[in-house]
Image (cartoon, rainbow, N blue to C red; front, side):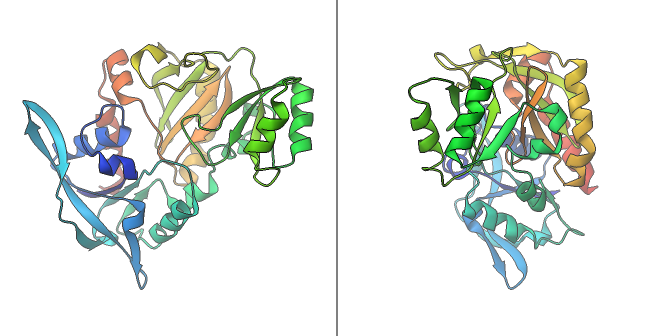
Length: 319
């Protein structure tokens, strides 16, 4: 197989085996299967007339200080993306216009020859915060707006709420809102850019503290392996990626039902690598841009090799 990974710029800059980065686990597994793996970033994609091309860097595994590591050739080469079997589009948010333009370029990939995962049209249609509204009976109450008065009224009605920007990740810009808080108006004004930028505000789930579960879905299948992301120190949300902030957990029947309900819609939209965030058995977010599967933690807690199962699935897409 010939594979291109479109990775984040910071991952490209510090390209080496990093057990916290899902893409690196997948690249390493592909290399161990003797696949040809090239990397690039969004800014290195381009169209030549209607042919999707990119400046690519070939990767390889090496032994370094008695340990295995990954490197890429410093000399790039130009290639048509239609000459590859699979393209994994995995830059991290924020979803900027640069991000959207990159998905437009990938729309020109010849789908009869090359599979793009996740599908660029699917990514555009599935804003990670808003896509949950396709399943309103599974989600907390919410409002999406830039109107400061509507947000204030929502907080006053529910007394506690969580405000989230629509295009960021890793908890950036996420705020806990409380009725009567003297900082309430300042937070709302700041995060909406004085009423110019829409945000989503969800009711605060009072039973959800340290119940932030990441459910893995590959090809529409709900994986049994599941972890809970614990709140960071002096915070109400997960914000620190190290072992003390993860807990091995099991899916409830309701959580498995949530995954099964989403399965056909996700596959229909070409969203094959997905991470669901669930709190108090409510769906709060659907991660489709560059979902982190917490492979290091899952492997250690469940004694599995999650990266092998994911790459098995990716291989099945092009055989």
